[in-house]
Image (cartoon, rainbow, N blue to C red; front, side):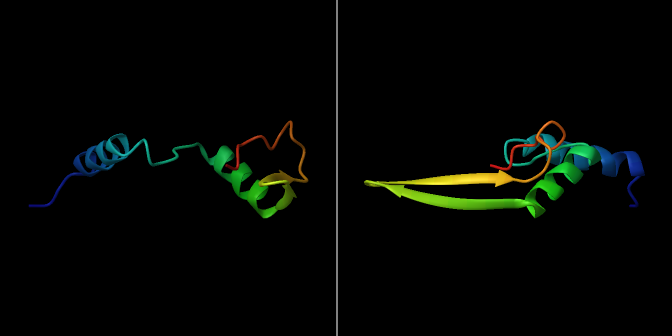
Amino acid sequence: MKRCLHELLDTYFQYIKKHEDRLWVANFSDVAKYMRERMHASVTADKASDRIFMHLQHSLDMSTYNIPLH
């Protein structure tokens, strides 16, 4: 039997809720910011003694582009 749109949406959102610990749900603006940050990001590493320090940064304005990349 053909399922109604509201049943399909209900199933979809139940799936998202069930797996929310493994999914990132965000609005379009935050997703676009995240994608732009990733495009402009760089990673560097420093070694000191027996430790390695990783540095993740981007060159965009931090007051606008503030979605965590980790």
